[in-house]
Length: 301
Image 1 (cartoon, rainbow, N blue to C red):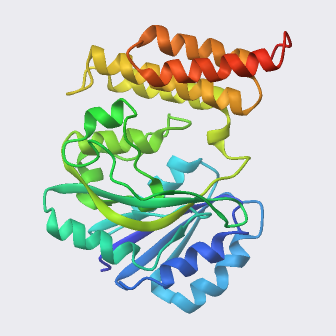
Image 2 (cartoon, rainbow, N blue to C red):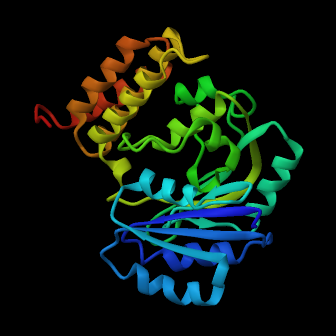
């Protein structure tokens, strides 16, 4: 039985899959198995995986299913898992060779931790690094559930590893969420377990213009669903709900501004400010969008 099961959901990601799989093969810790779920791909994913499956044998389990979406694909992998630890790697992301070794060292040092995450870079579709996140987040370790709820901390998916027992206790990814399903599971785990950090870069997270996170309305609705789902949980009370709602509308405003829809973004920013005026970030976002609107004159979005 492997020590770590690596969960790779794949949907029409044949272009990047070789890089992802090879980043697992390059790990300095080798007691792993890949659970690769082909979520109804219509490209040549199966053909791309075939030579790796032949070479790796039992270290790679390929599962094909009708399309269920990202949480459904991850859940299929979890149901087929048997290792003590489950590590996430999306098909277009890349691990550093130290990813698993450094993560397991942190689990050993923090026996009460149910989930461990680490530092990451952002890369563009061509693999160029566009940002580096290599600093500890305030309130990012220990009992972090309220900060996950308030969107005060981020746990990048390709750096996340959790104990198999956690999902046995709190359940799988919520397939009713069309986004934010990762934060939803992290919160449920954090309500019962400590969270620890690998204080080094361990993964590249690839951003794509066509990703679901670039759809502001879809993201907003999923985030609102998440906030209401967990309202009333320990540390997720009225004040935390206001902060969470303010964060969501501020992020929505920024996303609209990036899509050159500053007037719509300004409305969302003003809503964020009205919900929680104590956040100075709301003032900055509103001011930035207002300047963008003035620059566009009276044209609307």
